[in-house]
Amino acid sequence: MTDTPTNGTPEAPLGRRTVLIAAGASAAALAVAAAAPVTPSPSADTAPAAAAVCTLTKEMTEGPYYLDGQFVRADVTEGKAGAPLKLVLTVVDDSTCAPMGNALVEIWHCDALGEYSGFVGNNGHSEPDDGTFLRGGVLTNTSGVANITTVYPGWYRGRCVHIHVKVHTGVTLTSDGSFTGGRELHTGQLFFSETVTTAMAKVSPYSANKVTRTTLAQDSVYDDGGASSGLLTLTALGSTTSAGYTGTLTLGVGTS
Image (cartoon, rainbow, N blue to C red):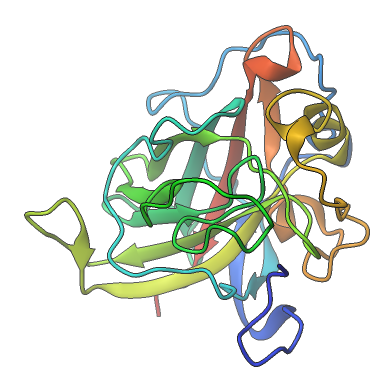
């Protein structure tokens, strides 16, 4: 299974539309060691402020595994095994870098064995498929912060470890816990330190995934642009790799 559109054309970054991602994280800070010391995770009240100077980055294709009508929820794990991942994503207006409240940040990604809900079996593993695990999103608070709990993604044929993300505004929440309408402002992907992923691949349940892993350097989408290309800043949640990480990034989106 490769993350390619159904017409067979390899997935690649789209150059016609751009978003801003607040700068400030150096390459050294992004390459977090797998056994890094415990650092308090950012919360909704202590989220990173939008930087005064921003860096342009390209949007990226949503890939073939997006499903409409997912739940609005802060925890998308549904009991899936894997190291905890606490995402702290801050959305800002590209023209002012001011935080954007009430924007829906939606994510979707594969599990430790490289399987997407709704498409289980494409990476060679048999497991229950409800079409919703590791999918969903939350509305940002008044500080523009979306806090989402998930697990560290696995990998599948042809792609490095990543998470897909969309930002919507003006959505309507529905009685079944999902959303409709609104305007999609951004489609992108989030990426992970190769140092951390290499360590993660050695622990259970990731070690059971025998599919050859594509690295960041080999990936057809990630362009080695660091934070400006969606590379998360990872902070260890404990003293072991299995304890998981907090992943932070500030996304600036165009509103015009």
